[in-house]
Length: 76
Image (cartoon, rainbow, N blue to C red; front, side):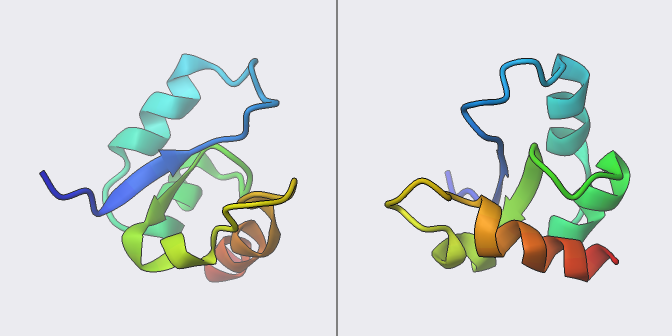
């Protein structure tokens, strides 16, 4: 199985409702389409494989910066 996009959230957001995850997960299209559907440039978001290299694998910022800012610009 090849994964082309994946929903992403932050570990410090335990109160994100199941409906938010479901909406983002089921959104068709790429990054910006899922953000528009959720109408919020914050996690959870769906991130396309082409942007995975922008997610830091160390440190405390994770996907918040610069990836979420980039996604917000795609939508805005």
